Length: 283
Image (cartoon, rainbow, N blue to C red; front, top):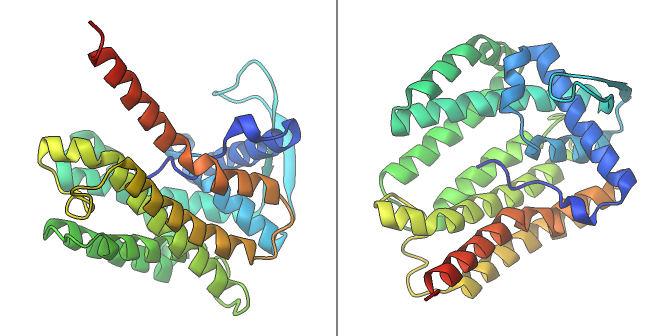
């Protein structure tokens, strides 16, 4: 369920876009340092939001620089990293490993099994560093697998489960009684939105292939406008929690993501569907 928590670059200022890319590049660089070059292939922009939010909340010391890399060999690009980036890199590895295991269990994809095997040692190191967090993630993923395997028709069951998983990711300082509970609630709200958004985008294909979709029963007789209203309500609740956090640094970038970027894949899917319909209607 990656690829939703991203920015809309068209609505960012040049300075904001440069900052956003520098966080992403810093995360990529940190993944290589902590988990090897191949781990960079698992990186998505979603974890960049985690870095932006936690750095804004906890204001760690930043390390910055510029360099060329395999992805950008011709021109130097800026990067920014911190202790938060290291945490996000580890979490990225944990989620990528679990995602490969899930693909292997569900679809028996040999490539996913091989990728999981390659990440096993790094995952075990992360598990040693964050034993309770990794155990919680594993438990929620097992719970989610059970929900899906029994064909649960109430979409709230899976959404709440995935929301709990996401909430755990946003708890950077477990002993912080002031901000950790609020960050957990924010992550829970964001996770519920992601889970339902993913289900909405997969709905037609899952129906066609006879696969489980948590919205299948709920969406019967409902049109695009009604499903969009549900998504709007969910991201609205998430944004409401965000606006109560004392975020100053990079607030504009994060608002761009929550108010615009999270709709990127949804809008692209609607546009593709419209083009397909127009093409089918051609004489």
